[in-house]
Image (tube, rainbow, N blue to C red):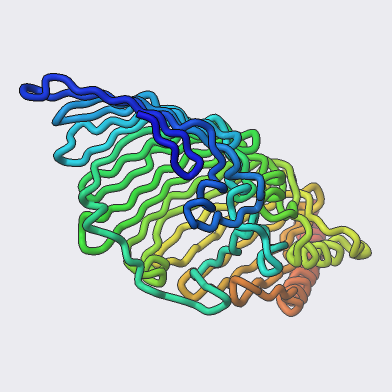
Length: 421
């Protein structure tokens, strides 16, 4: 069989045997290289606008299939799109139930090339190819929304899918990964990623996630682990600025349930932790405020040209309950000072109430910086009153210690004279 249609050159071949007894069939399909944009135009379809107008310029397809009345297998599958090649197989072990098993592999793809082009409203927001800036509360055009999340529950419960999908090189939303390996399953309403692993900026990532749609209320769970990731280059690729640098280890384990964003936030629970090796906090209002207080703490002139905070180690952990992230042990260690932090982030209310305490190396008193307000635009304030109270208290204790020592010396002399010693 050969068919020429809309610029496509399609060749196929099929055969069947034992039609009256135990029917079995096999087929082969090939689509010669074509230009997807031109095919869409000939079909009266406007090609999508993409960040790279050279994509969707070349494609081809080839596959073989065989099966019977009970099952089918498509192998090999070969699909080429521009510079990307997909190979693999798909099995349908039970046509009656619609079960699907797959094993697919891609050599490499840059998804950013296929995203919509940047516009004036999306450029400079850290998004590639017009990626909308994310917000914590699912806002759209600055207006908070809390629409019901309509999941196709009946469809999810009917799925019987399992397989593996590998990508040797992947670039998406500016992030670059290598050797991504995804194992996915969906059966009886339970969808699982178990796991997704990949190499990420000289380190690794492991993600496990699930959506449980078996009951009336959908349940979500996520476990994330980053190991040895170079945070500086990763953040620079994401946001065009290196706000934070250092080799990072991170872990996150959270779960929630609900059918609205607000409900998911209020139900969020779990724990998180991170540890950064030698690095810095850069180019931010926080770095500006901390450097001012450090200059005061160390009795040094403030240099406004310094826009980073260098550290030898940065660590923190948090408990999450009812959507409130509670951290009590943040610690940033530097050669001349230490920063400790404690406070909360209220995700449902989208507010932060946090305090940074800056200690001079070996010192006991600290200079506090309060971080409070909306998550999107928190305020930073040096708590001068608390700082002065601590200094006065410190001087008071110093005077008391000095007086106590002098009194002990005087009493010692008197007792010495009394006993003749």
